[in-house]
Length: 424
Image 1 (cartoon, rainbow, N blue to C red):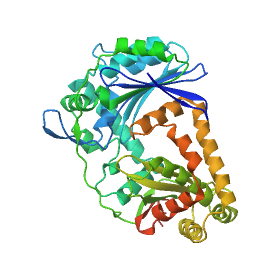
Image 2 (cartoon, helix red, strand yellow; image 1 turned 45 degrees about the vertical axis):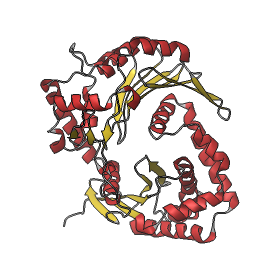
Image 3 (cartoon, rainbow, N blue to C red; image 1 turned 180 degrees about the vertical axis):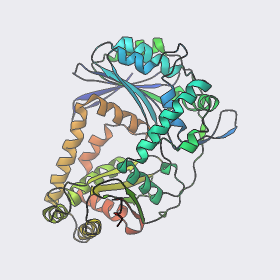
């Protein structure tokens, strides 16, 4: 078993690869809680692939999310989510653009729940009846997301930024796309992407690494399989459109500014930290930008900013609610221009770096945050502890370089959700 230790946060990460090629990651924590998540590197972007027999497949949008819903259904007529809940554990699942995760968290009955958990993830059961039963539920979920302004402003930004990249596909799909999902297609997806070397099992909390490994091995059914070959469209350097707008039932406009980053080979961890530092410098409560807009009542809260990336895309997203869209965009452009021209003051950089570091350390206090980050980073070929090491070498010159190279006007998109126009 490999053990990676980080002295800065005094945490150890135990990593074991089983004979079937499944990676298991365990981080013991001094807490009563136990958290487990089993994830596969399959999400909404993986709709075109060659199966192991060389046959080409193109599956409906939303099928990864549909399979996540249906995997709880068992041949004995039970729903595993209900079984886990009856044991007093907090069970759930989620689908992203590049992975699907099944999980539960508890203080008691962990091993009783482990039997059900490892059984349902490894034993899919799809029928015409149970697949059809779920269609209406997922249609309602799609409608709910269609009515969710924060999701709409995000998806519109992706569509404005990317022409071919599959991140512009909605995770849940559409009513039309999920109508094409059948049991055979779900089995096809499970067989193609739910195999050990494409998965990771993460455990965090009050856990003994050696003991839990034996329990997992005893419950393991999945066998080694050769990888499935995925097919992705080539993405042009340019954005699709600079501005996209939609009206919804909201009281105040939501603005999302995105910068497309075409450099997919540079150190993403370091760039992620740099963007977090820049967000504090550019938009934080002590910035000139925030003071100007907050004091004049044009924004009511600090804008959120993050660097979202994978192996296939990267972009910066900045979001705020404001009735003064043009003023916000103009003030942000001015702030970016000023820092590009004048550079960052060393004392401001050090202050922002300390804040970002503190926020990152806090994430190691929560078992679910730790597990989620471990999974996300694993599928990006990142060791989570690398973030802590990169803080050591972070300097203001690198942050200025990221500002210059990523915050570029011709790769900027603006997505806006406005309240419905009042009719006379």
